[in-house]
Image 1 (cartoon, helix red, strand yellow):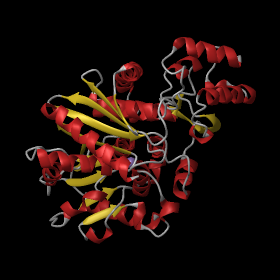
Image 2 (tube, protein in one colour):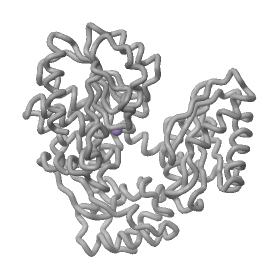
Image 3 (cartoon, rainbow, N blue to C red):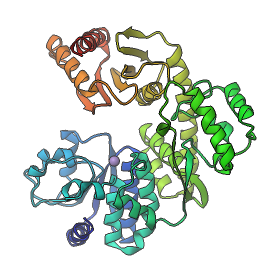
Length: 449
Ligand SMILES: [Mn+2]
C-alpha cells in the first residue's frame, strides 16, 4: 500500500500546483483528525486551503463541492468511498483518502484514491481515515512524521486499537511521546479517579457513573486514595479496581469490554489520555463546533480553552441525560424499548445516551433500544442493540420507514447506519404515526425469530 500512497502523493503535488485545495471531511473524531493532518501538511507546503466538515455526503453536498472545480482541487477524507456513483462524469480529478467500504467497479481514472480495501492484504493495511491521511502526509514530506500523534487520536476514535493491524502498529512506532499501558479502559487515565469514575459513561459502571456517593464507596472499598489517577495506580490497586468494577457490571461478564491498553500522548505539552482527546474532539464536532475541534487538534491554545468549555458542558449533559433517560417512562415491548425524550434530551446526544444505556445492565442482551429526540421540526431516531448479537438495526429502521412511507407518501425519512447502530430523521408532526409503525415492525421482527 505504501508504494501506492507514494504514487498518489506525487500525483497530488503535480495536480495541486497553483491551486487552492478544498478539504471535505467527516465530522467524527477520525474525520476531524484527518482534516487536521491535511491542514498541517498543506500549511507546510505553503498551500492555500479551506475545510468543510460534513455529517455525510448527500448528493446536494457533493454537487456543491464539485462546483468549486476547476478553480480548486478537492480532497475528500474519511468519506466518499461509498459515494463513487456521484463521480462517474468528472471533468477534473478528485482525491479520496478514506477507509470505508468501496465499490471498486465504480472507480475511474479521475478518482485518485487511497483506501486499504483496494489492496490484497486488507487486514495488514487496515487503518482509519486519519491513518490514510497520515501516510499520505508523510509521503508528501518525511517532516510530517510528527503528525502520527493525530493519526493515533483518529485510531482510538474509530476503535482500531483492540486489534492492531500491521500498518497501525507502524503508525504507533512513528509516534514519539506515546506511552501504552495495560489496564482498565477508564478515561482520562491522567486525572483523579474520582472524576473519571463519576463521568465514566463508557464503560458504564452501575451505581458509580453519575453517582458521587457510589464513587466514594468504590474508592473506599478498594483502598485507593481520592486524588490518584488511573496511571498512578500500582498493579495491585489496578487489579482491585478492575475486580470492583467487574462486580458492579456482573451481568456483563465479558472482561474484554473494560480491559485494554491505555494510550497516553504528549499533547499541548502535557500528558493526555488519547481516549479523552478523541472524545473531546468528537463532542465539539457533534455539537457543531468543527473549527474549534480542528484548531484544538492543531494545538491552538485559544481553541483549547473553548474546547474544554464545550466538553465540560457535553459531559454534564450526557450524565444528566443518562439519569433522565433512566427515569423516563418508556414504551416497552417484547425485545425492544422506545425512549421518546422529546425536547428533554438534545438530539445530538440521544444516540450516545442509547449507546450508554445499551452497555448498562438494565436490559437483556439483544434488546433493541430506540431513542427519539426533537431536532427543530424533525425527530432524530437512534437505534442501538444491547450486547453484540441481535437484529440488524438498519434493516429494522428501513422496513419501518418503508411501512411509514406507504401510509405517509409525502414523508422524507432516510435511514443511515449499520447492523448495530442506525438512525433516521422523521417529521415531528408524524411522531405518533412513526411510533406505531416502529412498534409494528419491531413486533413482526420478533415473530420471525
Ligand atoms: Mn473513520
